[in-house]
Length: 266
Image (tube, rainbow, N blue to C red; front, side, top):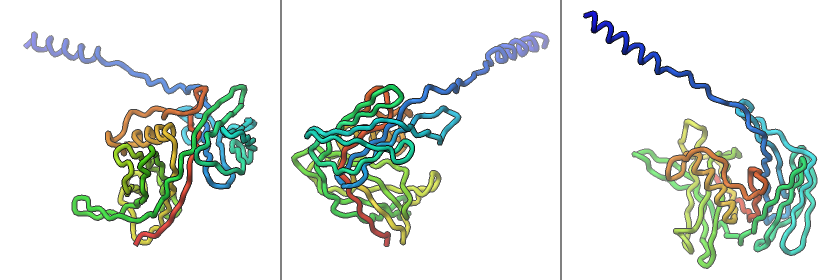
């Protein structure tokens, strides 16, 4: 019995000695510039938004960056000076043209950031509608975008979905690698909140924005879609998506076509 008690004491000491306090370092990294730039084929105030990243304990607060010099040029010799409309938001009325390459130059806080994007040809968004799917005996209504993919070019698409004027948080992105030249029906699944993925309901008003984007911007949105946990692998390790902006800036600069259609769920 004495030996047994000694054995238990030694075993307990071993387990106790294996305990280790792990301290997670949440020190805030240095802030990085974030640029979100869009040039579309609509005659509107095009917009470049400049902000900064924040620390781990400051989530949801993204300070805008004022005082930047923002210039966009194209490969045909046009030059556009963007003016600061509100803190961190720079605008210029212009219309992008398919086939033109647009270059961004941002000078702020002693650094210069550059990017370029070629606006693809517009692929017509023929219509939008609602598809009824059955999942384990339960019917679920889903928005769908219909278009015909051009056969003689490579195309990349990004969609935004609004339900009752509320923006869907999902990232919808598509390419024609396996569907070149086909008629496409792209389903845009909707979740009303993080815990309730119940689809659309009769009477819901839906709007779909369709963008023809270049390959670099496809990579950006595709990476975000994978990290959201809704891609083929049900999510990947979080990381910054590949930016087409120089000097380690985050974000993207996209020259793309734009279309929007709306309908009501029956």
